[in-house]
Length: 129
Image (cartoon, rainbow, N blue to C red):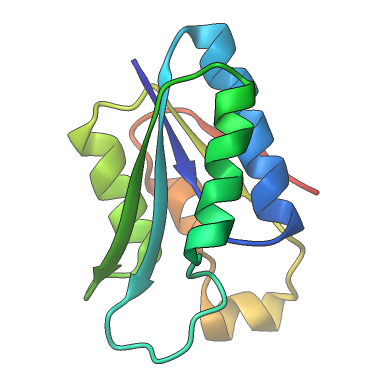
């Protein structure tokens, strides 16, 4: 059994990691951390550095859950990468962070959590911080 954590750095990412750790502990599952960016982007604030990933690993270690990191650059959108990994590992749950965005912001930029919520083949837990 596997919980997929769609991770982006910041306070929301920390809250999402804590929720994924607690959920995995309750389910007796491992966590697959997915942090993805498009390979054609020069700067992406959602791309985690090694220190940020180490912090997520500490959180999951404190929750006593096994984990695996998928730190991926791809031509695909991050939502597609998360959904692909979830299907690959036969995830029982995906945990995503959700922040308030304006309707125009969602229209222009899209919403990774929204795409995951709408297209996932397993339950999705949305975390607000």
